[in-house]
Length: 90
Image (cartoon, rainbow, N blue to C red; front, side, top):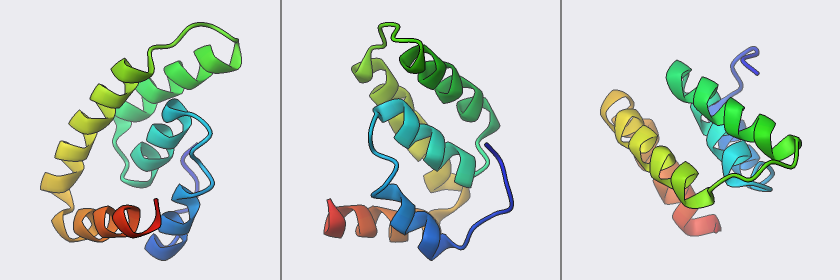
C-alpha cells in the first residue's frame, strides 16, 4: 500500500472513506504513519476479509489501540489532530 505520502489533511479526509472494515481502516492509519509491523498485521486481516474468512473485529480493534499508543508517542501533535478530527467527524 505504501505510496507517495499524502498530506495530513488529505489523510484525515480519507479516514471517512476507509471505514468499510476495521482491518481496512487500521491498515490505512498504519500505512500513513509507517507502522511497518502493523501494516503487515492489518494487511493479513484485510486479506482474510477479502477471502471471506472469519476475522475477529474485537481482536483487530485491540491491535489498533496498541498501534495508536505507538503513534501517540512517535507523533504526539499529529495524533492529537487526528483524535480531534475523529471526535468531530464520527
